[in-house]
Length: 333
Image (tube, rainbow, N blue to C red; front, side, top):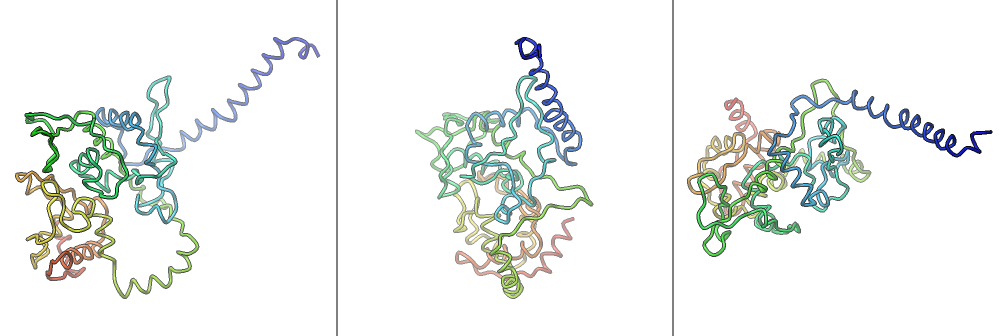
């Protein structure tokens, strides 16, 4: 009973008991989980610029509105090709011996999830315009402007990244992206969901009860009507070319009356979607990413998008078939 009458022994016994419990309950399981969870093939650590951008992402409080976790819910299908798993975060290492590195998974989703934004929106020009003034690319956006990440210059150096949009400058000065803006964009472009190794089961999205009840009815309707080209266009193309197809003058070209869209031969249009395009850089337009490849679009989806573009905004061009798209894609490989 001397233990209870000696406060030093009682304190040391309690401390020892706490440390032993911590070892078995917290430390050892964490080390075991860390050893069992490896990074996915194809993953790479952030480079210096991307690390700098991650710090800016944290400093600006972006995690308050954007998550980086695709939940296994049907409503999250827009944000990634599969639900997130532990291996997606296994490559995150400590900042230093004193500080852990935040996973930035977030808990609020006022803005879109960013898990796969590097694939979903890989255009550097789009991200810069979005940071400078979100309403330029998404008219209904509630995101604040991050103008302080840009500089106003009378003259731009060749290495400067100038925002190519009419009216972006003030007092005849050019809007130039700062290093902080370029670093933040580099970090956002690095956020890409890796494919699982062959043979590993891909987690499925859980459907809500209503979706299960209506799946039989909707599947038969889809077989009859085909894919929704307008919805696919909205998900993959409208952020740059805009829902009205007019694009943004000086930044993203219009699809209304476009020679590529109106061409009866879909070769160029399919090639642009699958391989990207930078043929109008001399006019100030940024390079278009390979949306079809980056977003893993199927030939049926590409055909639906093309036919939507060819029959919308006053365009009247020859509709394409899935077989035509498949033949062109196979010739590009």
